[in-house]
Image 1 (tube, helix red, strand yellow):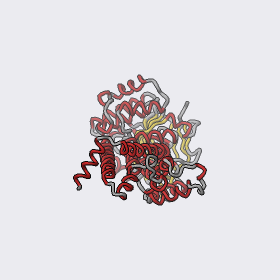
Image 2 (cartoon, chains in turn cyan, orange):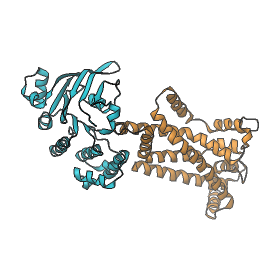
Image 3 (cartoon, chains in turn orange, brown):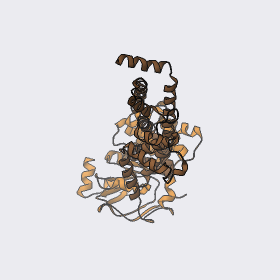
Image 4 (cartoon, chains in turn cyan, green):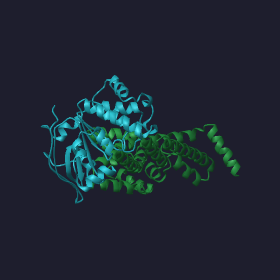
Length: 231
Length: 227
């Protein structure tokens, strides 16, 4: 199943008359890490949710290869800014997701636990683990079933440098293993470290879309300049 | 005098007085039957309402919330008119039987169970909807997950229903008739024994009811702690 190129044609989205996204046209060809950046309220998370099919939009606005969002939904997953975990142990959370994805092999969950290095917390209720550990469990849940696309909504915004580093490594490794990553981030140094492509939004409009390398080398308008300087 | 009454009441309890045991077991039979019927219908129904947001759903929730405070005697009267010989369900021939009492208690606690379940599942859905939608689950699968995640809260709802049903007197008195050895339950027996001046049995039953209420409160408190 070829999920690329991603093509978005004239996407507009409003809530109660407020335009959240306007005239979004995107074409993405590379299986790399695409960063969606922008100030608060610029529409980053909404765009991510639309791409993941959590917000319904008119048919044919978005195409993943030749497929619509609903056709590709099983090959996607999402990690939220605030990890959403069930009131169960880490192991049970992972088993729950794997069962929902029709994976009944118990050793599969063990492999995921080993891969994410979360064995120490596998039998602890996720209520009692730290924020960084919760985010790792959420990532572990998101990689079950080897999705072709993973969306990360500011996954490290509330974490300390050590967890940030660990999670960035996990995301980079996922990207290296042929998973397309879309990630929102405010962290300029993080964007520099792991981003390959960047889409910059302002008030629901794309004002910049290019490689991260060019983003940091080109001259920009004041808005992006400030974002780079103070992000 | 009070000491004599208490002594006789405790004597009835500790000697497992036959009449007392008969009344308690019928009470538990009626209340538990009503509870099982109500919970097995009302919990899935209350949870189901969360997923179907339309005018009918809002109306059902409104009606259910209103019926939570319905006076039991009014409900008893309605059931009486329905199942009495001239009523539209008169052919069922259940008036003055435990079946009518089970029906009354089921209808009495169902709005409570539906409304509290709806509120609990609504809260949980808000908490988990992004994850469940992200996993592309069917509504049935989401429902199962949300009910499981609310299990302790729903047990509390069940106990609340049990407490309401076991303490109810008006409706079961009207539709059960308080017939000795047939439809006499704790609450109706208390009312009956007090009215005829035989206060000892009423006090003994009162203690049992209080004990049940105490156990329920204790269980609810522990469940709240766990959840």
